[in-house]
Image (cartoon, rainbow, N blue to C red; front, side, top):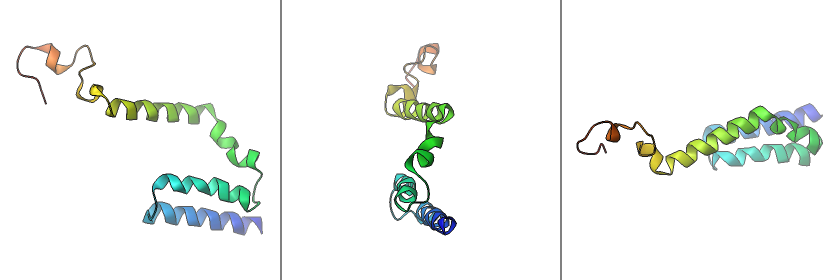
Length: 92
């Protein structure tokens, strides 16, 4: 019976991801649904998210988003950016 519940949660999350009726991060609530439906205990459901590899990817994505939201996206923070390599009008 737990296999059927797990499959239904997985199918629901896949439908949410494909159709996008709600923002994509809401699909992450599938982990909570697995715990609430009794498919797996909370410690087992969230154990894969405790991996150092996952935290490395999360950190890299946070840094990338921070770079997109700051002046570094146009290269102004880089020491050899095109605008500093030769005199002339700034590159937009």
